[in-house]
Each structure stands twice: as structure tokens, then as C-alpha cells.
Amino acid sequence: MDGKIFLVRHGEVSAEYRGRYIGSTDAPLDIDAAQNALLNLRRNLNGICRSCFCSPLKRAAATAENVFPDMKIVYDQRLREIDFGEWENLTFEEIRQTAGCKVIQRWCDAPDEMVFPGGESYPQFALRVDDFFNWILLHGYMAGNPCVVTHGGVIMRAMEKFLQIPHAESIKWLPPRGEMRILTLVNGELTDVQ
Image (cartoon, rainbow, N blue to C red):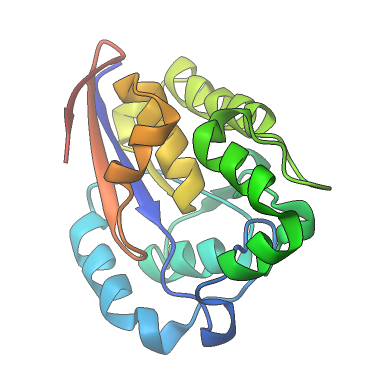
């Protein structure tokens, strides 16, 4: 199983969603704000990737459709961002005021054990993301240098999985919106990250 996985973080969202936790919120892509990033991605990825897998949320779907206008895109629920539940569409300050210091401290101290009120637990999220990447490897998609257009949390989880690092360290590998990480695998083992 040799090849590359191109992990693309969706482009910039509409202004009213910036600075907010929008896991399962279906925020649209801001095409004007994302235009340069989309052009760069299209220029760098077309002709290299033979398959594209994508979160079904609007911001990711619009990114994939702009980058690969002539490719069949496979939408996969496992690539959705984590569901923040009652914290959806709130700023960190609003969450802090709502949740209180103890909950925020627990979130900071043990993020991989977090259960978002009314939302998803981190272990549930990690399980579905890992399931997707195991499926990619198992079914031979590596030969086509797959592109995965998704969200920051999914990319951070992929980095945890492939780099075998703790959750708290994965933020270091998060690309800005509209940019990517490239994982090179040989015999299913990670050999390089760009």
C-alpha cells in the first residue's frame, strides 16, 4: 500500500461563523475569501489525485467541487467534523460562560476524553475517523493518491493516528483553512509528512 494521502482542510467559511465552534453546523464556504486557496489547491492536486473523498458538510463539499470540478467526489459521513452539541456556533468565551471553569479545565486537561454536552464524545469521533482511514488503506485507494477534503478535527485525528502522537500534540499539524498536509505511506507505514 504505497502512495500519498492528501488531507485538505476546507476553505474559509462565511464571516458570521468565523471564530465559532462549528463542528456539525453546516456553515457555507465563503467562495470570495477562499478563492486563492481553491486555485492553489486545484493547481497542485489536479492530475495527481485519482480519487476524492469528502465530508458532506457544505464548506467541505464546496471546496472539493471547486478543486475537482471534473471528478466524481465520494461523500462520506465519517469525515464530518466533531459535533459540539450545545456548544455549536458559540465562541470560546460563550462556551466558557455557559460551561463554567471546571468543564473548560477538563476539556483542556483531557481533550481526548471530552464528551460535548448534547454532542459527540471524542472517542466516538476518533473511532469513526479511524474507521474511514482504515477503509482507505484496506481497499487499495492509496494507489490513486486519494484526496480527503474535510475539517480541522478530522485532520488532527488523522495525524494522531498516523504519527502515533497524543491528541494534545495534533494541533501542531493542523493546516490553515484551504491548505493541506500530505502523508506518504510505504507498505501502509507512514514515511513522510509535508
